[in-house]
Image (tube, rainbow, N blue to C red):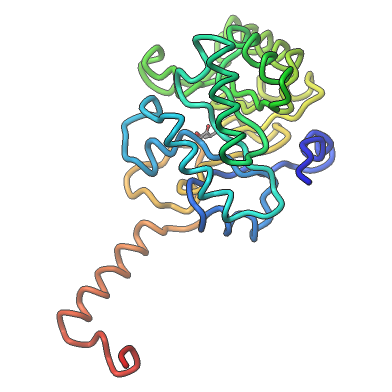
Length: 262
Ligand code: KIV
């Protein structure tokens, strides 16, 4: 039985690892590798669908991805991003859409971007039994407002606002908070202040856990590498090399050789 208290209990004991998956096979690899949580992120909009940002992702898109991910995992919690405008407008929207996600996919919880301005929606979900993960700092769904993907916590007023938002999220009942692109010293202060875990992405080493887009750590993109990403593989380059070798083999009549036909 999935129990998110196991995640909360890791705070101050061991680092929490969360990675993204949008389909069956990646989810299967992630569980085999030993991650603690899988996130069906709305980064799927960029990584899977090729959009410029996460805004076009719909509830039906995220449900499609989550169903595929759920088929690849047995025992770890799957957290699902609430897409842009599936919760911001009202508690009724939040309940309807988060309910649909959990009912149709069997996922463990939803993640929502925002702070004080979405506390009512968060409480409404938790009241009806839907666990929520918070996400603050740089919120990719607000890219139009920022005009890019800035680092947060550089100015004192930004730091104060972040702290206020995190306190409000914890009080509302979220079981963990993603801190995205937050200055490391500010992320540390927030992590020390909270009783629930922080999971950082581009937020330094002091968070209680780390999350990355799996395709980023595997080096899937040839020309996109944010400063906070360490590439543990070069699957983009290696895939192109492999496909080129296949093309050459076919053209030269080397494939399929006897070993590969009946
Ligand atoms: O959509 C996503 O993948 C995310 C993570 C990067 C935290 O929200």
